[in-house]
Length: 499
Image (tube, rainbow, N blue to C red; front, side):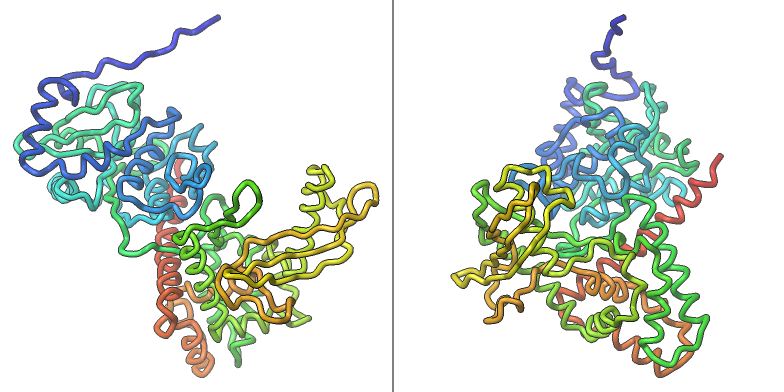
């Protein structure tokens, strides 16, 4: 039997005043004249309706991130980089958000991982006067915006918890403009600020914690060029626990007489998911014809990412990690970094996939049915270096297929030498990830090391003071992100103990 659908709701007024009503227009005009609508025009330029009933947090964050002109650093659709709800998949799987919604802490986590500066305040950590100060600060500027997490009940609206950005403030009436992202239900509307605070000062039944508000702004520089932390699933919780709790205990539990012995101790205890904790961010860009073509802006972005990777590999710590991992007796990281691939493996994979396409067997691209019989690497010298891998591949049916594949590697002169084998595919491997992981740990991690000489050498290896600027910014961002995710881990623990 067909079920009748719903077309909007009547906005209860009072207490709310519809934005498009005569009174709403008057409030807007007065607030505009008083200078407390400065952020409105940015927000309204990128305003969107949530695409799913439970996506209010994702839609609110998308609007604010785009209004702040924060670059996602990865493609959305076609060649375009843009935030929408589908791009906010870091801290919680989208299917779970679609089914259950999202909590205040995880929206704050998403904002941070997306590259924004986040000031999150739960209701028990703030008050109405402080909320008003933050409101005035953001509505008199284009540099920050407020997202409120609130319950609809104080406004006599149907529904429960909700997120929406705040579009403006009327100082004379002490009213806030809620840009409700559920426009299929209620239009944007003005509400008394004290009543909005009452709606914020409620408990989320899903977590047992108070709701709150967050102030989102831009960081002075892009927070990450190459690396970020992955906190989408439970793996990062296990690794975060290892880094925050287990590593300090390990380094203080035994007396080691060398850096090599200390790192061997840590590597042996690495969780199986450690390789997934830090992920690398890089884009493969190509036209449909398969010809690499980068704009000057894109080339600069890619070169900066490659420069960060080179700076990692120039550190003394990287050389030590590489030496340890290359030891034939070192087997403790083989299962930890499942995505590790040598250049030869990359070449073989590229050739096999190219042969599968050429022979009309795309199915075999994801199967272990193609055998790379012979591979080599060529560097084609031109204005921008290009790397071509060549191979003879045995495909389904036993047929041999010769194939040349252009790899999207660095366009920066000098990556390839006269020896083709010296050409390095520019993406992080386990050596890089472990190095970055160790650099990102806070200095207090190592305070329990008993041997003073070992401690002094260790601190000189992991110090960020002498790192090149790009790498230093990268490491400090990861360290801050790790700290932030640690706080979020505590929230998750509290949530897990609720009945």
